[in-house]
Amino acid sequence: MIRLEQITKTFQSGRKTVTAVDNVSLSVNDGEIFGVIGFSGAGKSTLVRCINLLERPTSGKVWLDDVELTALPSAEVRRRRQEIGMIFQQFNLFAARTVFDNVAFPLRRQKLSRAAREQRVAELLKLVGLEQKAGAYPSELSGGQKQRVAIARALASGPKVLLCDEATSALDPQTTRATLRLLKDLNRKLGLTIILITHEMQVVKEICDRVAVMENGRVVEEGDVFTVFSNPRQPVTRNFISMTSNLSRVYELLEQDAAITRLKPGQLILRMNYIERSACEALVSQLSRQFQVDLNIIFGNIEMIGDNPIGGLVVIVSGAPESIEKTLGYLKDIHVGVEVISDARVSD
Image (tube, one colour):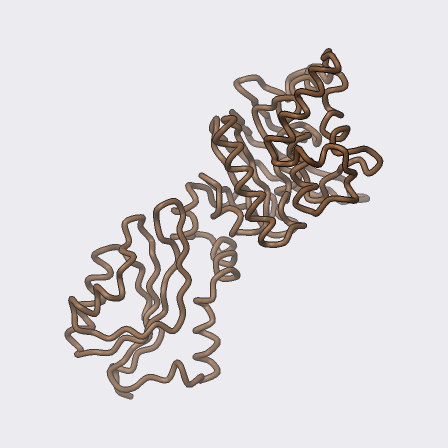
């Protein structure tokens, strides 16, 4: 559906040339939800604006449905841009217009009768669950409702693609989850291709099929969400994971010599990471029964991506030396990542 070929975007800042996007190539499939994640300044918002040519790339090509947008004259670009809806962090609604008029605004250039326009707006408001708010003004709406109006307005022209630029960043966690559920529902009902720009890893894990990680204007890592986040290859990806997981706290506690991390002779602290889709959810009880070891969980962070667990556990393992060795070997055999963080089996 969307193909970017060697996209570069530079800006002039005085005498200095700033490269916001640096030679990025990506493909987004028809009907998928594709996430682009990065810290502030990574270039992700500039990249998404290059997709609909709100920012024209300095070099490179943008394709929509096998049509090269970057080769089209301006008038044709404006026409094709109707196939790409866009929503923003700050909603960008008209404060002096009602919800109905905000949603109807993109229809003004279409040759629709008044009745057809009203029917279209009513359908869109029902789709986003705001049919009772048609006569309200943005100031009377919550943040989540404003974003739903923005989504309805973006869908008014019947786009094939919806670009979401930090669309949940101004929302509280509960409203964020509701908005993501709506986007996933629209993706399923309408076959809508969605590109999500975000700095929040939880957003990507919640609904995205694939993800690209950006840093300093470049895509440094790309793949399906489970693979990228269960086995991160780049430091920036590992930073995202550590920021949203409490597993890394064990290192701080070890440095502080916290009581919870003090081991008895023969014990060890083990970090287990799910790195394959087939990881067993009942891992702790299975290890205890099979190898006669005790596992005391001190940290845990397990989430589901689709039907697969991602995350891991930090545990204190106690047992006979040969039982612990068998446990470690078994974990590696079933492709659970194993890191021995602290080991009291070896005497000083």
